[in-house]
Image (cartoon, rainbow, N blue to C red):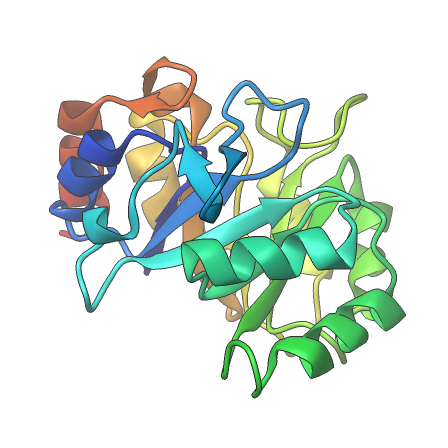
Amino acid sequence: MIVKVCGMRDGNNIRQVAELGVDWIGLIFWQKSPRLVTMIPTHAGIIPDRAPAVSHFPSDKPKRVGVFVDEMPQNIITRVVNFRLDLIQLHGHESPTVIRNLRRTLDPDIRPGIQFIKAISIGNRNDVTAYKEYEDCVDYFLFDNKCQSVGGSGNQFDWSVLEAYDGKKPFLLSGGIGPDDAEHIKTFHHPQCIGIDLNSRFETEPGLKDVNKLREFIKTIRQ
């Protein structure tokens, strides 16, 4: 099971979480997010500010996921380069054409092998079918709880509606997964579910994760 911890920006915290054996770390580049990873211009170019240095990531893993919401393609490309992103997660209304063009631009000349995740907001069974528009242009889906604002709400949706997902692309389960959900995760089964996405319910403050809670949770689900 892939364990993705999203919404991180503190270098030391990332190093501690990486040592737990998580697979993916999510860096959010949406301007309205309280977990925004910002960048500042300097005479030497654009450098991270309030963000992890690349050296905070081990050489083998975790992989780096950049999270974007209706961002301009050039800005996405800039962050792929500066943060050496392995995956791009799109949470807005990005069209399949935009995704295909981004892939052609990045792979292989700028970031060979980069992968794409499309987040799908789920409120009911009918919402699941939105995946069909993107299945031929992304590598993974992320099913999250539908809310009024863009991005996650920290709340769960009824996971049973994912029985309606009959696509061929693997997906991650997201939306309000917390320390008390380990046993629930272990009882959820879908042939295309390959992992989970963790964020706000493991935080001591926005962008800072409770390492002890994550350690116990990961130990439980991997037993």
